[in-house]
Length: 509
Image (cartoon, rainbow, N blue to C red; front, side, top):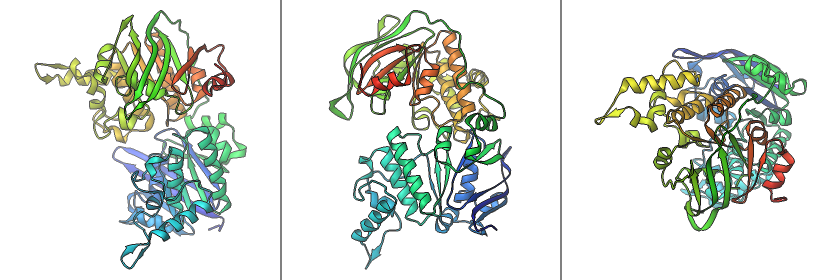
């Protein structure tokens, strides 16, 4: 084996009942490079990384993985064995203990012990050494729950590096980060590379691949489609490799004419439920017309998610203002009241707030709509199944059966399940909070088309997105938020990236 190659996948095939997750995958990763892996949800990226990190032992798949010149044969304690060999992974969902300090998290289960007791001075000194070496700007004794998401991710990286990782896998590392935090992560990756650490970078954000990676492997339907130096690729080529066809436009064209105002918010003010003296909303006003997509833009911390959760009756305590639907004031104090009034919310955190992961697709779709199928204290199972099957068909959810647990679906199909259950409730206003976060370009395009179809049928859509291009590409009008209040609402014709950012940062009003 070439000494320059640290990792090689040879004809790796992994099967689940009825599904071939990986099909004869072969490619190499060089020592000390940043290697990107991309593909649609369900392409096999996560399965491959689970093999590498020991979630799936070597006797559960065919083919071989060569690591550092030797075949990787991970057995019963596969995850621990992988870590001992120098393979570490930072997952999209962070795995820290929030009530512990940074140092305690970094050396959790591996604390330095002397004379039967933990040597705290050594623990924090060792933590500080790692943080300083890789320029991770986090205090060793800070309690994790007091840190922002970006700092928490630095702790995860420090934790991986404390085990002397040779290969660091980062799975969607920027999905919850601000632009400044993304810039910092990119700097950290360059430092890791300069220290000889190989990074595998998995992301749906194609621009990040071109910004940081040396090579990119594209996967589709469980196969390796191409492995190429990043400098020889373009976004158009990558998308074509990922979806198997050319996508001439990122956002589908729509032909709709919004109607009259159906939903209106006037000077809404609300308090933080956990800090009664702090206003999370400080004067928000906007309206939405029937058959319109209203985009809400703003920086992290501007109050966008707090706004829609408050509208849905599940967050702030409203102290002033009005919420009007069809010219009638509504005061939802719970999700059920909001649903009954005609609102539906696709939440930002689909796994934590949008789905019951261990339940079936069928049960997830019908859950908020059981009153449609119940009479005399029993559920009409046939009607429930028929309605859920129709929703699944309408949104082309890829699954062999509605009895499949939602946790087994790809991110894009999970999001379709969330949308399906709310469409079954026939909302007048559909609120979508970062509806394409963490899903691939093909699934994004399908959701964009669905949004256009719903708007053309008269549904009023409020869409929050951290992707400004998405806001500009999908909205009829854009309301910009800054520090808990609405600044102005722009038509899409007058909205530019520069103008929206000026409003979001408070430079202009």
